[in-house]
Amino acid sequence: LVFDNLKSFKPKHVFVGGKLVVSNGTLVTRIQKNIISPWIKKTVKLKKFSKNDFVIKSKKNNVIANTIFMQNEIITKLGTSELYPKDGHVSASLDSDIWKVAAFDRIHGTNKHSIGFLENFGADIGAFASTWSFHENDLIVIGSNDSDMAIASNHLIKNQGGLVVVKSGKILASLPLQFGGIVSTDSFETVSSNFEKINNSIVDLGCKFNRPHLIPLFLPFLALPSVRILAGGIVDVKKRSYISPIN
Image 1 (tube, rainbow, N blue to C red):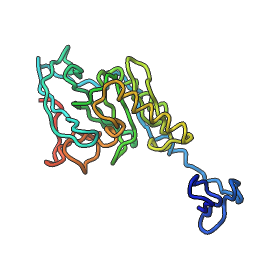
Image 2 (cartoon, one colour):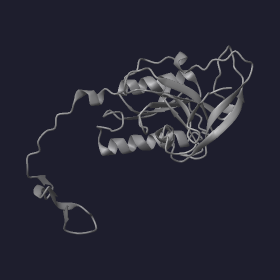
Image 3 (cartoon, rainbow, N blue to C red):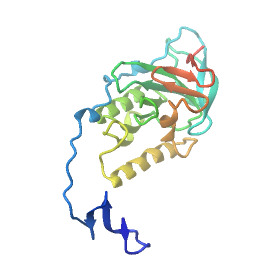
Image 4 (cartoon, rainbow, N blue to C red):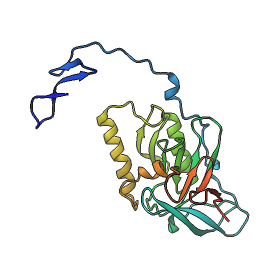
Protein backbone atom coordinates (compact mmCIF):
# COMPACT_ATOMS: atom_id res chain seq x y z
CA LEU A 1 0.00 0.00 0.00
CA VAL A 2 1.23 3.51 -0.88
CA PHE A 3 -0.21 6.51 1.00
CA ASP A 4 0.17 10.21 0.24
CA ASN A 5 -0.70 11.18 3.85
CA LEU A 6 -0.88 9.46 7.23
CA LYS A 7 -4.16 10.97 8.44
CA SER A 8 -6.86 9.47 6.22
CA PHE A 9 -4.93 6.26 5.46
CA LYS A 10 -6.59 6.10 2.06
CA PRO A 11 -4.16 4.22 -0.20
CA LYS A 12 -3.07 5.97 -3.38
CA HIS A 13 -1.61 2.84 -4.95
CA VAL A 14 -1.99 -0.87 -4.17
CA PHE A 15 0.63 -3.42 -5.20
CA VAL A 16 0.17 -7.19 -5.00
CA GLY A 17 3.20 -9.40 -5.63
CA GLY A 18 5.08 -6.39 -6.99
CA LYS A 19 2.34 -5.61 -9.52
CA LEU A 20 0.24 -2.43 -9.46
CA VAL A 21 -3.43 -3.43 -9.14
CA VAL A 22 -5.14 -0.22 -7.93
CA SER A 23 -4.19 3.38 -8.66
CA ASN A 24 -6.07 6.42 -7.33
CA GLY A 25 -9.10 4.32 -6.50
CA THR A 26 -9.26 2.62 -9.91
CA LEU A 27 -8.59 -1.05 -10.66
CA VAL A 28 -5.83 -1.13 -13.27
CA THR A 29 -5.45 -4.86 -13.78
CA ARG A 30 -7.68 -7.79 -14.54
CA ILE A 31 -8.52 -10.05 -11.61
CA GLN A 32 -8.89 -13.71 -12.41
CA LYS A 33 -12.13 -15.08 -11.02
CA ASN A 34 -11.72 -17.92 -8.56
CA ILE A 35 -14.11 -20.83 -8.81
CA ILE A 36 -15.52 -21.75 -5.41
CA SER A 37 -16.45 -25.39 -4.84
CA PRO A 38 -20.18 -25.78 -4.06
CA TRP A 39 -19.55 -27.91 -0.96
CA ILE A 40 -18.11 -24.98 0.98
CA LYS A 41 -21.60 -23.47 1.19
CA LYS A 42 -23.23 -26.75 2.22
CA THR A 43 -21.48 -27.64 5.47
CA VAL A 44 -24.44 -27.77 7.87
CA LYS A 45 -25.40 -31.38 7.19
CA LEU A 46 -28.18 -31.78 9.73
CA LYS A 47 -31.80 -32.84 9.53
CA LYS A 48 -34.56 -30.49 10.63
CA PHE A 49 -34.75 -30.29 14.41
CA SER A 50 -37.72 -30.63 16.73
CA LYS A 51 -37.84 -29.91 20.45
CA ASN A 52 -37.56 -33.66 21.06
CA ASP A 53 -33.97 -33.57 19.81
CA PHE A 54 -32.92 -31.66 22.94
CA VAL A 55 -34.60 -33.84 25.56
CA ILE A 56 -32.67 -35.25 28.53
CA LYS A 57 -34.64 -38.05 30.17
CA SER A 58 -34.75 -39.29 33.77
CA LYS A 59 -37.22 -41.34 35.78
CA LYS A 60 -36.01 -39.84 39.05
CA ASN A 61 -37.83 -37.17 41.07
CA ASN A 62 -34.65 -35.14 41.32
CA VAL A 63 -31.20 -35.30 39.71
CA ILE A 64 -27.83 -33.66 40.18
CA ALA A 65 -26.78 -32.02 36.93
CA ASN A 66 -23.10 -31.68 36.10
CA THR A 67 -22.90 -28.18 34.65
CA ILE A 68 -20.42 -26.27 32.55
CA PHE A 69 -20.06 -23.25 34.84
CA MET A 70 -19.06 -20.13 32.91
CA GLN A 71 -16.45 -18.17 34.88
CA ASN A 72 -16.15 -15.75 31.99
CA GLU A 73 -16.83 -16.00 28.26
CA ILE A 74 -13.98 -18.47 27.80
CA ILE A 75 -12.93 -20.21 31.02
CA THR A 76 -15.20 -22.81 32.61
CA LYS A 77 -15.27 -25.11 35.62
CA LEU A 78 -17.36 -28.07 36.68
CA GLY A 79 -20.49 -27.10 38.59
CA THR A 80 -23.45 -29.01 40.00
CA SER A 81 -27.11 -28.16 40.43
CA GLU A 82 -30.18 -30.03 41.60
CA LEU A 83 -32.93 -30.24 38.99
CA TYR A 84 -36.41 -31.73 39.13
CA PRO A 85 -37.59 -33.74 36.12
CA LYS A 86 -41.16 -33.29 34.92
CA ASP A 87 -42.90 -36.02 32.93
CA GLY A 88 -39.56 -37.79 32.68
CA HIS A 89 -37.74 -34.82 31.14
CA VAL A 90 -34.97 -32.78 32.77
CA SER A 91 -35.36 -29.17 31.71
CA ALA A 92 -33.29 -26.01 32.02
CA SER A 93 -34.04 -23.77 35.01
CA LEU A 94 -33.88 -20.02 34.48
CA ASP A 95 -34.57 -19.46 38.19
CA SER A 96 -31.29 -21.22 38.93
CA ASP A 97 -29.54 -19.86 35.82
CA ILE A 98 -29.17 -23.39 34.46
CA TRP A 99 -29.28 -23.76 30.68
CA LYS A 100 -29.18 -26.61 28.27
CA VAL A 101 -26.23 -26.75 25.92
CA ALA A 102 -25.86 -29.04 22.92
CA ALA A 103 -23.17 -29.82 20.35
CA PHE A 104 -23.93 -31.41 16.97
CA ASP A 105 -21.55 -32.66 14.29
CA ARG A 106 -22.65 -30.53 11.34
CA ILE A 107 -19.73 -31.29 9.01
CA HIS A 108 -19.82 -35.04 8.45
CA GLY A 109 -23.54 -35.84 8.67
CA THR A 110 -23.00 -38.47 11.36
CA ASN A 111 -25.85 -37.32 13.66
CA LYS A 112 -23.29 -37.44 16.46
CA HIS A 113 -24.27 -35.09 19.28
CA SER A 114 -24.25 -34.46 23.01
CA ILE A 115 -26.52 -32.51 25.35
CA GLY A 116 -25.71 -31.17 28.79
CA PHE A 117 -26.18 -28.21 31.09
CA LEU A 118 -24.52 -24.79 31.28
CA GLU A 119 -24.55 -22.44 34.27
CA ASN A 120 -24.07 -18.69 34.89
CA PHE A 121 -25.15 -17.32 31.49
CA GLY A 122 -27.94 -15.06 32.68
CA ALA A 123 -29.64 -13.78 29.52
CA ASP A 124 -33.44 -13.78 29.25
CA ILE A 125 -33.52 -15.46 25.84
CA GLY A 126 -34.82 -18.72 24.45
CA ALA A 127 -31.72 -19.86 22.56
CA PHE A 128 -28.36 -18.81 21.16
CA ALA A 129 -26.81 -20.97 18.44
CA SER A 130 -23.60 -20.80 16.43
CA THR A 131 -21.66 -22.82 13.84
CA TRP A 132 -18.55 -20.73 14.50
CA SER A 133 -16.57 -22.77 17.01
CA PHE A 134 -13.12 -24.22 17.56
CA HIS A 135 -11.77 -27.65 16.66
CA GLU A 136 -14.52 -29.41 14.71
CA ASN A 137 -16.83 -26.43 14.09
CA ASP A 138 -19.76 -28.20 15.74
CA LEU A 139 -23.15 -26.54 15.90
CA ILE A 140 -23.35 -25.23 19.48
CA VAL A 141 -26.76 -24.38 20.95
CA ILE A 142 -27.44 -22.79 24.34
CA GLY A 143 -31.06 -22.58 25.41
CA SER A 144 -33.63 -22.09 28.14
CA ASN A 145 -36.22 -24.24 26.34
CA ASP A 146 -36.14 -27.03 23.79
CA SER A 147 -38.52 -25.36 21.31
CA ASP A 148 -36.40 -22.24 20.85
CA MET A 149 -33.26 -24.39 20.63
CA ALA A 150 -34.85 -26.24 17.70
CA ILE A 151 -35.89 -22.96 16.03
CA ALA A 152 -32.38 -21.54 16.36
CA SER A 153 -30.80 -24.70 14.96
CA ASN A 154 -33.19 -24.86 12.01
CA HIS A 155 -32.46 -21.22 11.20
CA LEU A 156 -28.76 -22.02 10.91
CA ILE A 157 -29.50 -25.04 8.73
CA LYS A 158 -31.46 -22.73 6.43
CA ASN A 159 -28.64 -20.16 6.37
CA GLN A 160 -25.97 -22.90 6.18
CA GLY A 161 -24.14 -21.38 9.11
CA GLY A 162 -23.89 -18.37 11.36
CA LEU A 163 -25.08 -17.10 14.72
CA VAL A 164 -28.67 -16.55 15.83
CA VAL A 165 -30.56 -15.41 18.92
CA VAL A 166 -34.14 -16.56 19.53
CA LYS A 167 -36.75 -15.65 22.14
CA SER A 168 -40.33 -16.94 22.35
CA GLY A 169 -40.11 -18.40 18.85
CA LYS A 170 -38.89 -15.17 17.22
CA ILE A 171 -35.50 -14.34 15.71
CA LEU A 172 -33.99 -11.41 17.63
CA ALA A 173 -30.71 -11.26 15.71
CA SER A 174 -28.99 -13.26 12.99
CA LEU A 175 -25.54 -13.24 11.42
CA PRO A 176 -25.31 -15.57 8.39
CA LEU A 177 -21.93 -17.25 7.85
CA GLN A 178 -22.56 -18.97 4.55
CA PHE A 179 -18.95 -19.84 3.69
CA GLY A 180 -18.07 -23.02 5.56
CA GLY A 181 -20.32 -21.92 8.40
CA ILE A 182 -17.54 -19.64 9.68
CA VAL A 183 -17.17 -16.81 7.12
CA SER A 184 -19.76 -14.41 5.72
CA THR A 185 -20.15 -13.52 2.05
CA ASP A 186 -22.02 -10.30 2.93
CA SER A 187 -20.52 -6.81 2.94
CA PHE A 188 -18.34 -5.62 5.81
CA GLU A 189 -21.01 -3.11 6.83
CA THR A 190 -23.74 -5.78 6.94
CA VAL A 191 -21.59 -8.22 8.89
CA SER A 192 -20.54 -5.54 11.39
CA SER A 193 -24.14 -4.48 11.97
CA ASN A 194 -25.43 -8.04 12.39
CA PHE A 195 -22.53 -8.97 14.67
CA GLU A 196 -23.29 -6.02 16.92
CA LYS A 197 -26.97 -6.99 17.04
CA ILE A 198 -26.06 -10.54 18.11
CA ASN A 199 -24.05 -9.36 21.10
CA ASN A 200 -26.36 -6.49 22.04
CA SER A 201 -29.50 -8.61 21.94
CA ILE A 202 -27.98 -11.02 24.48
CA VAL A 203 -26.29 -8.44 26.71
CA ASP A 204 -29.35 -6.18 26.80
CA LEU A 205 -31.43 -9.12 28.04
CA GLY A 206 -29.23 -9.76 31.04
CA CYS A 207 -26.21 -11.80 29.97
CA LYS A 208 -23.50 -11.70 32.62
CA PHE A 209 -20.77 -11.24 30.03
CA ASN A 210 -20.06 -8.45 27.52
CA ARG A 211 -18.88 -10.68 24.66
CA PRO A 212 -21.37 -13.56 24.53
CA HIS A 213 -20.36 -14.49 20.98
CA LEU A 214 -17.20 -15.97 22.50
CA ILE A 215 -19.12 -18.53 24.57
CA PRO A 216 -20.14 -20.96 21.78
CA LEU A 217 -16.84 -20.23 20.03
CA PHE A 218 -14.76 -21.53 22.96
CA LEU A 219 -17.10 -24.10 24.53
CA PRO A 220 -15.60 -26.95 22.41
CA PHE A 221 -11.98 -25.73 22.79
CA LEU A 222 -10.12 -28.57 24.52
CA ALA A 223 -6.92 -26.57 25.04
CA LEU A 224 -8.49 -24.54 27.86
CA PRO A 225 -9.82 -25.51 31.31
CA SER A 226 -11.87 -27.05 32.59
CA VAL A 227 -15.06 -28.49 31.08
CA ARG A 228 -15.89 -28.49 27.36
CA ILE A 229 -18.60 -29.89 25.12
CA LEU A 230 -18.20 -31.48 21.70
CA ALA A 231 -20.50 -33.62 19.59
CA GLY A 232 -18.75 -36.62 21.16
CA GLY A 233 -19.61 -35.65 24.72
CA ILE A 234 -18.90 -33.39 27.70
CA VAL A 235 -15.20 -33.45 28.52
CA ASP A 236 -13.26 -32.94 31.75
CA VAL A 237 -10.13 -31.46 30.18
CA LYS A 238 -7.76 -32.12 33.09
CA LYS A 239 -8.88 -35.71 33.67
CA ARG A 240 -9.24 -36.39 29.94
CA SER A 241 -12.53 -38.15 30.53
CA TYR A 242 -16.18 -37.76 29.64
CA ILE A 243 -18.76 -36.41 32.08
CA SER A 244 -22.38 -37.52 32.29
CA PRO A 245 -24.85 -34.60 32.13
CA ILE A 246 -26.78 -35.90 35.16
CA ASN A 247 -26.16 -38.18 38.13
